[in-house]
Length: 328
Image 1: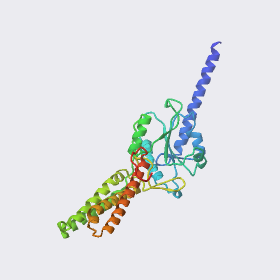
Image 2: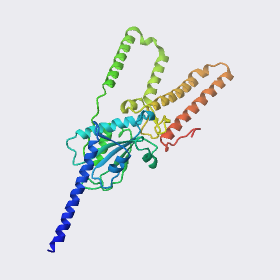
Image 3: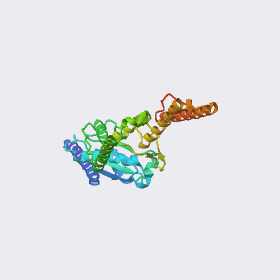
Image 4: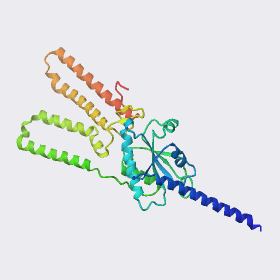
């Protein structure tokens, strides 16, 4: 008879464990039922509080904080959303998940504006990880953490690789084929071939002279040094935007950039180059001494101001940049 309390206690523990397991399975089932075709759950304030920040959850959540409504005009939000969906599609179709239950979610500012204000989130998009807190999948440190959105992690393969390291299971992104991109590249290539053919047939390149070749060389150098190739490889948004709708021309970190940065930097380099060429080639030919002095002063002033602006851009993107000239 003395064994009865022990047996009853064990039975109660078994029932509680079963109930907890059923609750976990039901929560996970509820979230998966809300997944869209890409495997992403669109969350609101209620779902976030119930299923994401639950301290007893036995699954992990990869959540983007975003603003996808057209009124916000958030280019980076749309870019990160495409990246997250590519990773979510790959995970949804992945057969071997390594025993991991991972849910991909999206929380838009329009669906949880109060939460964004409480958390003082004014810089989006952001990617948050809410690890499993209980069960066999529990992390040692189940505290939420932010995944830094660098140039690497902003690409589908880079984000999948980073999440693979975090969760200890191989993840692969499934990128959708952008046929319009291939078509546009094909059209550009065909136009370039036609232009080269016409130039070869009808123009004697030897007659163009040194000035034309010098200008063409400078333009090519400006194109390559302004970040054009980085843009072609990483396909960043043209410009950023704050939550309030203000335009951001320069990404605030040195490992990212917007498309418009390339154009601004290229123009800045071009002005510096123009000033140097004018000072070396054309100013010495001015006969009048007063005019020559005035033009020299104007070109030097333009060169110093432009180069100072360029230095200020570098310092803004990388505060440890050691050089400074006039502008902060």
